[in-house]
Length: 333
Ligand SMILES: [Zn+2]
Image (cartoon, rainbow, N blue to C red):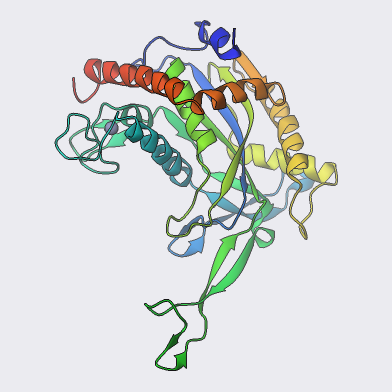
């Protein structure tokens, strides 16, 4: 029997249906998001930056500037990845006046598909559904000064060259980009998970590889999955987690600013940081998987999404739970 099959049979991990009232059941996906090209996490043309304390320990009390990925810059791409899959299996459509029409970020959110029910929606006065997927802003481990680079870009004429009527344009403007191998620890939480909902949210985390401003195609980000924890409460914040990882890297003399951090160093520091912080949480853990043991589970999920029929089965089950919820409690009741 596969590990997923074993987990699925445990009532302490999954609910049979999406409940209306919070049941105090949480599954936390602990991620390390690593940039693999030059994403833009920005508002109004400048990268999002905030000054915070460097580490958690007293000897690292100095403040530094860190890059920030706001909540929506994390969830929107993951939602869109999921919606693309729902669309390709015919569960939602963009075509007008179909029973399963669902248009993202519009008054035509359908209020009953897995995306609407799990990730939520708000349509003015005509209804809202609270997101069951929670994520907070995440922060770069390294300071802003060591994590970005300004590139000048050339403004091309419409026909795609720098030259028009014999005059060559010089470069215009400069834009700050996040550099590759910058790390953002991030915890994504699903409340009151069903088995299919768990697979859907986890699938979106594993299948999304592009974040940040959509007009660029340079926003590659890899989500390292470090831990999955089922518990009866919320756990520590991304900022606290980032500060503890910073402490660990400095202690191990692996923190450096002239060169990118080593991905393996960061993963190991993040795993020990997780263990340190989770033991401080007044939360009952129903189950917990950490890398490298977690890899078996991760591979099983990847196997499902590599197979069209298994994917279809998961999405159909997911859709049934969403429709049932919408009928019972949703705006469509
Ligand atoms: Zn929908």
